[in-house]
Length: 219
Image (spheres, one colour):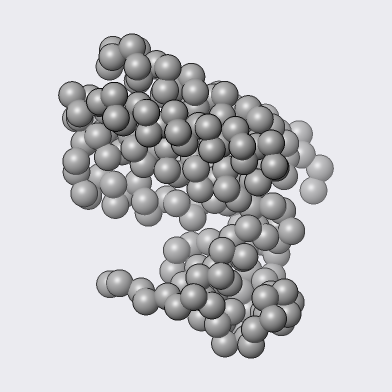
């Protein structure tokens, strides 16, 4: 089912997602419709509809008689999502490594350049969007729509994980372009097994750093 989203709703969705990623709205925290409406200088109608859409995505959760809350994240969620995302991308690489081209590598390098600019400006929300764009190129190698759909279904949870990454400072914004450049460099070598090993290391290190910060966090 296609959801039609108007301009006001798009702006509201972007604003709420940015508030979450930047840590202004924390995991498990109630989303105040009035405050978001005042921030955008709009009525509560578009905000309410935007929250309904975000609820369908899984970024926020409705609690009866209490309202919308940023979806809470557990340690088990982090472990599962990192592992699932890696295996989906690994499968995409194994199915479609023959589709790697200089055009694709150039696209990845362009994304990394934009990541570097976003990190200089501390644009966390943009870094999350660019991470999605980068890894979408890898998933697209297989040409399998259902594989991409499966990967896309975890987008909201990835947003929540990035929110925790930044909140717990398990990864600095300037590290993100660097770790993705390592992937691009590995892809340029044209060796499938080497790239898969680098991809596995990419996810394993990210997961390890976040879980370590999670265990030592002070709420």
